[in-house]
Image 1 (cartoon, each protein chain N blue to C red):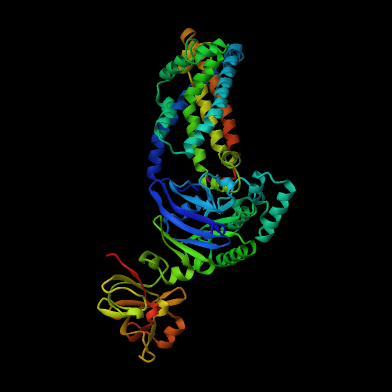
Image 2 (spheres, rainbow over the protein chains, first blue to last red):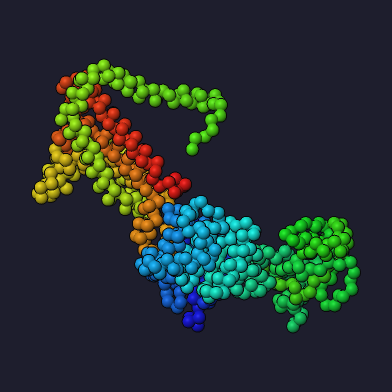
Length: 360
Length: 270
C-alpha cells in the first residue's frame, strides 16, 4: 500500500504558538489532485509547510513516498511550495527567479537556460523575462511563482490559495491551466483553499480541516453530499442543516425523523430516539403549486418567506413548520412567478435527506 | 516622495515651533562656533594641518571602521538568529545585546577594561602573544565595538525580520540550504538595513570618549585630543579642533546617506 501513497500523515500533532494541528491522519496518492478545504485560520498552510518540511511534527510521523521524512530537510524533499503571496524574490528578474532552484542545485548554465525558457513559454510569460516582480500584476506574479516551482521538476506541488487574489476572468484561465498542468505532468498537487468552487472544479479528493483538526476526508461526492458532521456540512455549503430526533426506525427502509414537530422520511438508518443533524441541499428541494407526482418522498405545504439572489441562483426560503432554503434558477422563479407570502408545495426525496449523529 | 503640501493647520504649526527648540540649540551652537572660526582663518588652517590633529581624526575613523567590520562578522549571524529563532532565554540575550545603550559610558569603559586590561580575562592571554589592548589601538577598537554593537545588531535584525519567512521557505523547497537561502535571498534584501546599521554603529563608535579613555588614553582619539586641549590650552584651541571634526563628520555622513539612496531600491517594503 505504501508504494502507491505519496504523502501520509500518521497521527501528526504540531503546535506553533497559539495554534496547533491535532492528531492528523490522512493519505494522498501519487498523481492525485488533492484539496484541503477549511475556513481561514484552520491550519491549512501549516499542513502544507509540514509536508514541505518547514515544520517538524511534535508527535506522529509524516511519510513521503513511503519513508519517514521527519528528519529530512526541505531542500532534499523534491516538493515545491507556492504561497498565496507568491513570495517572488524582489531583487531578481523573472528569469533569475525561475532559474533560482536550478542554480542552487548547480545545474549547468545551458541546461538552466533551456529549462527556464521552456517553462516560461509554457506558462506564457516569456515576455516578462527581464522584469522585476514588484512591477507586475498579481496574475503575472502567480505564473512566475508557478514556473519557478515547476522548473525544478518536483514530484509534489503544494499550492497555498493560489486563486484567492485573482479577478474572476484570470482565475478561470488559471484554473484551466492548473488542470492541464496536472494532466500533462502527472504530478501530485495538494491545494489549499477556502473556496468550494475551486474544489468542485479541480479536486479529486478533498479534506475538510477546521481549527487544526481533520473533520472529514474523501471524494468530492462523499464530502459535499454526505458530510460526517455539521461543521463539514455548513462548510461545504449545504443550505439546510437541521437539528432533529429519530422517532421511528423503518428497518431496511431508513427512518422517520422529527424536526420541529414535522415528520421527515430519510433513507439513512438510525435508531429510535437518536439525536441527529439532517442535511438537505437546496438544489434537491423542489417547489411547485400542486401535489401531483408525490410517491414516497417528503411532501409539505409551506409559505414562501423570502427570495434572495445568490450567485446565478435564487435562494427561496419556505416555512413549512421549520424554515427550508431551496435553490432555484432564475428561469424557474420566473416560470412559477414565486413571490413572498405565497403558498407552495415542497418536495424532496427521502434519499436527499442525509443524517449524522448529534451529541447535544 | 514629497507629499503635496497642504496649508499647515494649528497643530502642525505649534508642533513645529516646539520642535524647533531642539534644532535651534544645535544650530545656534554651530553658528556660534562657525562664526568664531571664520573670524580666524589662519588659526583654523594651522590647526587643521597639524599632524597630531590629522592623525587623531584618521585614527578615530579607522578604529571606528575596524570596530564596524568586526561587528559585521559577529553581529550579522547573531542578528539573524535573533530575527528567526525563538528560544528559551531569548529575552536575556536581547537584554544583553541592548545593555551598552543604557549603561553610562564610564561603566561600559570599566566592563571593557576588566576584560582587556593587561591582567584581564582576555587581555592577559592575548598579551602573551603580543596583542596588547591597554593604551593601544586594539583597546580603542574593542571599546568602540562594545558601545556600538546594539545599534548595529538591532538595525540589522530589523532588516532580517522584514524579509518574509515565506521567501526563505520557498528558496529552501527549491533546493537551497538554509545558508544558501540566507546568502542569496535574506542578505541581499537586507543590504539597506545592514548599511544603515554600519552607519549608526560607526557614528556611535567615533563619538565614544569615556569607554575609550579608560582602556586607551593613548593613542589619542579625537575626543581625547579635544578634551586634552580643552583642559590644557583652553576653549579656543579645543573649539577649533571641534569645528574641524564637525565639518569632517558632516561631509562623511552626508556622503553615506547619499549612497543609501541607491542601495536596495528594488524593494518597496523598506
